[in-house]
Length: 267
Image (cartoon, rainbow, N blue to C red):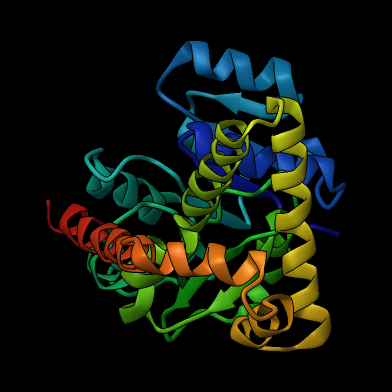
């Protein structure tokens, strides 16, 4: 039987997690509750997902066996932690998806009494793909949260010091892919293909190339060598791409994303 889980905060990321949990039939709607200060948001979550959403934090915390903090970093996290301490037993795991707030900070606010899990959720929750980055304090056990976490994707347990890099590279990763596919489809249109055909080819080649890498376990350079015959189409295309700033530009964008993640943590 799944634990009773309670979300503090009912924003977009929380909604995406709830939707995935319900769609994957890993949790029933009566096992999920949410509190949010916005009455309109509460009404929407109740009507859309038939869960128990309200503005009453106390009653929900009394029943919770797993508490997920999903508010914004600038919200009253100290007050949230005080409410948890006043109501929830210290055996209840506290899971945070709050960007930039460390386990050490939560331990200070919760008097180091609770199992604390810090999660950077992936943004591909509706697909079953994508890794969430997870760090645990000394009191937390993987068994406390694994069934919940795998309900909206895959999991990588990492050291907390890697969270910012994981966020800027891994969680922001779909952005780089979306941008590449858009640019590739535009190139097809520029060359003369209808937009619909260029788009279909871009998606099929992306999925197929990833599958080829998985099946062959070859390095991308090995597959490039197979595809590029002497003086052929592929090697000419690659030569032109090598003259661009593509690789360095992508690497700079990842580093910038990691930098911004660290900045947000310190604001």
